[in-house]
Length: 216
Image (cartoon, rainbow, N blue to C red; front, side, top):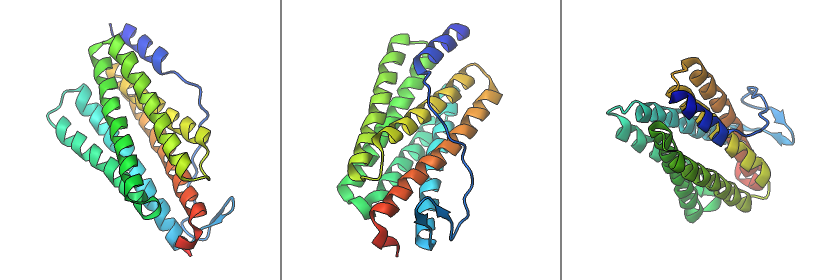
């Protein structure tokens, strides 16, 4: 049964996406492409990295609690959903209250669908797995469309590719845990964390380019 489930999961979630290795950047006075970072820019970058690292961290904790049916599942989910509100709040100084709330809502949907995907996989429900996985990727499209419409510096394709890769790596974690492959589980999380740091940098760099006067 586990072998069959793994085959189904791999078939459903496999995608070919290019992941550029993450390299640490100096904190101040570092030139990356056409951005010369000052303290206010670095503060934004570090804040966004923290938020998106929390995103993958608490998603991982939720996957662990959900698959193992742990008593802390609801508390972990509440903390994870708070992170989605925190991310939405982080863009309000640039895009306003409505936009921040919209992003939070899309990210909350992202988490809800992730939970439904994991539950379907855990229960071996192929129909629900296909249904919620499709909705999960459609939600990623909505997030990319929303962000790229708000900021001309964001490539819609790049954002979608990055979000699809995030879904793939999250799926890799869930598959590994379902198959009790702990090393693969840890490896997938490490990759996912690095990937989200890159995603956070794309978002913060785009904000800096769009609102340069806010960082003078």
